[in-house]
Image (cartoon, rainbow, N blue to C red; front, side, top):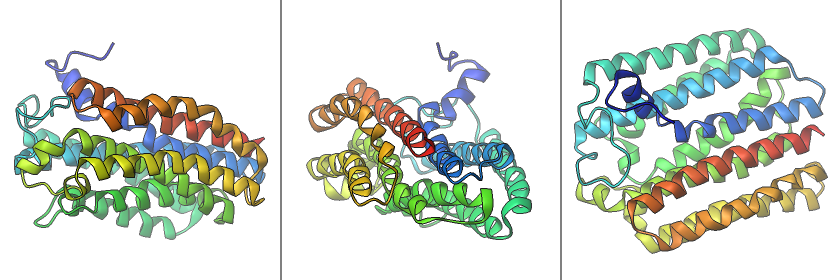
Length: 297
């Protein structure tokens, strides 16, 4: 049972958007599975990568909450969960401090990873922070110009998976790059589900997400392509001999995708779309864990 959002603890829990946090863990798990397969797994890099990824995700959520409140994108008309700053549960200064703290945790994890994997981690970390701040912050936020999905695919899919594998032995094998693609598809699907839910209020607020640009029907098709494309890609990689056969364990998660894609395709009411959003985040995690298990074995 989540804490009451009217309490201080509950407000911070709400602001962290816990249903999105599996998106940070899944690619780290896949990278760990690949490291086990290659015989280079170590607990230190794994824990630091997981902590850093979670901290960046929380910082992104805090930044989004703060920036959308300032720009009027989150108001009483939205059909999703309440936003902490816009609803007055938390103040702007408090959210700013919390964002800095989240980035500080990510930086601390990054400092350790620099000792393990070299200065490329600094480049990746700085790029991730600037990309997170620029998503909905600054004078020209690219999340308001239909580029949010590109950012999520690159940083929470490709970069998160490949760099999480890199920290073990400073290598980025081909299978890490390949499996980063379906992981990127599913994490991007989380954002698409969120934007489908908010399409009307985003349009009214002048927030031109990709869903607003494409329209509801085309965005639904895009969502299907991302979700089912992730499964198809794994099959293609296995048939091509590029990833281990047990990567097909991910197909066990396919039945979970059916009600999610159906809801996105047919529903317009808030409760159904919120359930679908939580469901795609859960699917992302389960898919990632099954993929990690398959490649590790």
